Image (cartoon, rainbow, N blue to C red; front, side, top):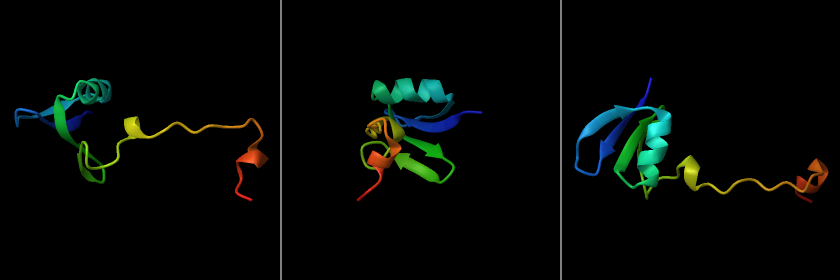
Length: 65
């Protein structure tokens, strides 16, 4: 099962997750649909834009003081 997307030219399609990642990287889609609704690229947060977690190696160090 794939994700519905809206391409730059306004067409709607259904693509695989890997293809969606590539299309987003190439800026060929303006929106995609996920379980909680439509995501507008550039307006709504998407996973590929999130910063990776950094770990110190000691989980206790990662807890707030």
